[in-house]
Amino acid sequence: MKKKVLVVGAGLFGATYAHEMANKGYEIDVIEKRDTIGGNIYTYELKGIQVHKYGPHIFHTDEKYIWDYIQQFADFNHYINSPIANYYGEIYNLPFNMNTFSQMWNIKTPLEAQNIIDQQRKTEKQGKPENLEEQAISLIGTDIYEKLIKGYTEKQWMKKATELPPFIIRRVPVRMTYDNNYYNDRYQGIPIGGYTQIIERMLDHQMINVHLNTDFMENRQQYLEEYDTIIYTGKIDEFFDYRLGDLEYRSLRFETDVLDCENYQGNAVVNYTDPETPYTRIIEHKHFDFGKQAQTVITREYPDTYSREKEAYYPINNTKNNRLYSEYVKLSKEIKNVTFAGRLAQYRYYDMEHVIALGLKMTSKFE
Image (cartoon, rainbow, N blue to C red):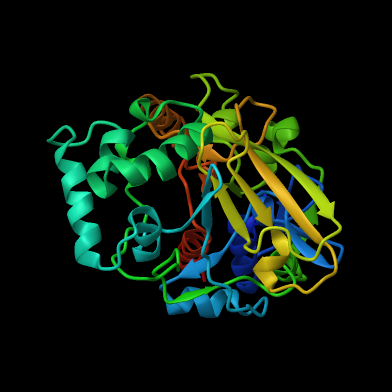
């Protein structure tokens, strides 16, 4: 007899897991404390434009099976992520590539760029980088760091770069080619019509029952007793009533406006890398879908301190928090019918492709 499963959270991971298990014949209840499905990839239509409510999401992967899987649920356009940096009115292409270096130093060749970067590296501390500032300069030199990394990163994390761990900056691409594509992945795009439809189609199954405005924590004990299997995608420290302390996150605040112009900034994402502009970036949503509407919708994204009542966006994976998380993992192993999975439950940053891969892997062992 197949067991009844509860999935806590209707984000991309929860929806993937529920969809796959329902296809295998399991009855699935999905509960979501928000009044919308989709988690942080939720999009909605405003003035004919799909708005990314919780920040921009660009789907990218190098894995064909992931690309084929997600396209069951939506048609994707050919959007290429090519953000721009604005430093006190100076405009630079991102990621760091020959366009950036040409704009910064008025040079033309990779050799010229590499010579400048190597010279700037030599002026700094040698040895293994101990913080983000040292890591960034070791990768890209002082000019790029001062104009395009330092101010943006310190706003984003609300900490000095010398207080941040070096690994945060290691995933930033650096290229000696004139290529503004942020990702190296073979497959990239954004669903035509937004992301919410993907979650809707995943959950549109006769074996899945979805309940919005339903907080697991309000009836935790009842759920633990009622269900044989629970997939919990919420904050792991909240599950245990924060008994060991709070894990730290960086939160965000968004301000969205409709503007009576067709084109506000000419690009989907513009990062403001100076320390004085209070927001980190402006998103112009219509450019994700090559929109031609008469009006436009922009969102200013502000860094925000985190508290239990706010949304937890980015885990602060320093030594202190990772140690605390490992203690919560020990507690989680004592709860036999609960599996902790996803961004919040595993206290780690996940790209969308990794969330889907995790869901497929976890469900593959079931008949």
